[in-house]
Image 1 (cartoon, rainbow, N blue to C red):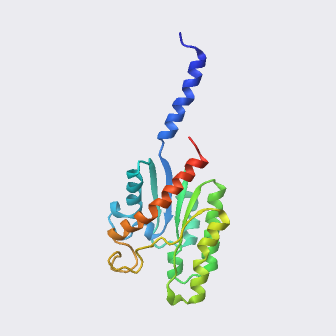
Image 2: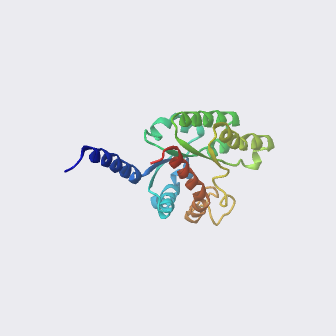
Image 3: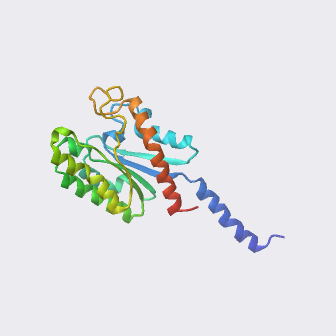
Length: 211
């Protein structure tokens, strides 16, 4: 004979198993560096990152919310539909186009600040990816721009990856002919360097939302 209490115990166990098998929902919100500009779909940052995460035995879906040419303000304008309900983490990579266009650092800071504010209000874990400014923009601009990222990461208590193009910037063997966007080998360098930090982000999700 089946006791009612047994059925009551079995139901939450099944629900817990289903929760454990559900993929972690990550959105990569960015510009052409996220979008995979100039590369085949399979060779862009997002699919390569998802494959690297899967190789670690982690069930996660990484959505590509990169739009070539986007500034930080553009990212803010499309934030709500780019990061849908159910998103658990965001890899935020914006600011390169702001710098290339010489947009005032305070404008970039304000847009990134608002993005971080809204994501943290939604209890979404964030990894903020920093960017460096070209030296020809002048020392004052470079200093004002580059401190945006560590200061905002500290303000909101989010994870910081100091420089998205770490190991790739300035290496012509790892970039496309424009000298800016990574080629396939460059993407692999980016993914290998950022992967440990993404795994930390996943751990943060597990801590905040244990199964």
